[in-house]
Amino acid sequence: MRGVSPAKRERVVRRTWDRRAFARLAWLLIGSSILVAGFVHAAAQHFAAVRLGYEAESLRRERARLLEERRQLLIALERADSPQAIERAARAQGLEPARAWQVNRAITHTAPALGATSTFGP
Image 1 (cartoon, rainbow, N blue to C red):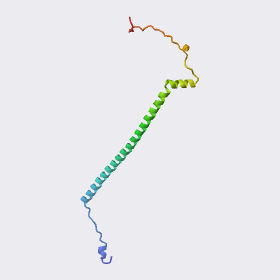
Image 2: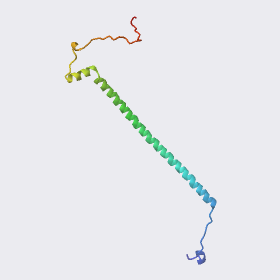
Image 3: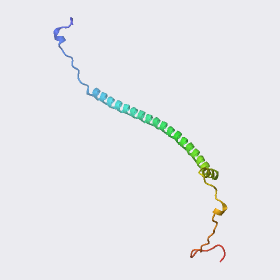
């Protein structure tokens, strides 16, 4: 530096600290940090809600699929439980229908229990 004298070159310029300005900057930093934290929290909540919405929709589709599968299984059960299906399955295993002489139609009469009232006569 040619135009500056050596005495002025060595002189250090010092600033005084403005405590109010420092306090304002500190409060601005704290407030901004709180605001940013709020936005980050709100964004996390939003993304969690969107994710839960997708999961709920997936569960709705799964429930509909399972209800349809249950309906199909109930129809198959009714078909398999019908007398015609049972007879076909029995014949496939070599069984035959019971003949009249094989059926025991004996009716046994039992004495009514003590204290029981009969609706048929005295």
